[in-house]
Length: 168
Image 1: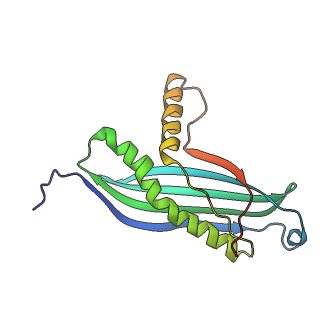
Image 2 (image 1 turned 135 degrees about the vertical axis):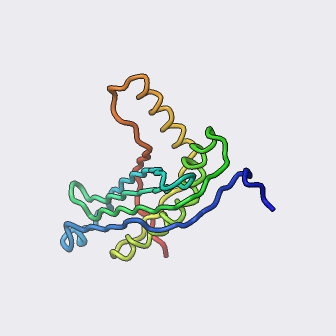
Image 3 (image 1 turned 120 degrees about the vertical axis):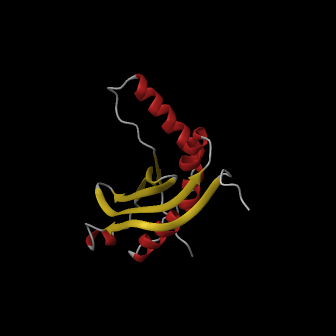
């Protein structure tokens, strides 16, 4: 029988929280021959939903443009509910900021690729993300903000530009 003080880490559920795809300049922009520039923004949000139960949401925003016109704008929020109990307080942040997003992210990648492909475009395959580095960056921003409370708000976000990758 397990001791009630044993550490617990359980995935309760993984689910798509939100998905949207906008093509504001269709159909005219679909006739363009130029390759689009793709901008990616990634955000991780943690919310406490009950005692020792957390919702971790990883959101990807993919904005493809040809010159100054939007080809498509896709936003997907993939979430997971995790139980983290009987874990030292100093370990809860890294678990919810690194381990949980690493579990949710493959589902997000698949949903983003599928949504964009269903919109009539080659799928955009998101590259791997180093959530440990992203978490360290967030912690540094929060410490800097604590030293300078009038500074800009800290957020856990990553951004990159890439070209879409088509599958054969």
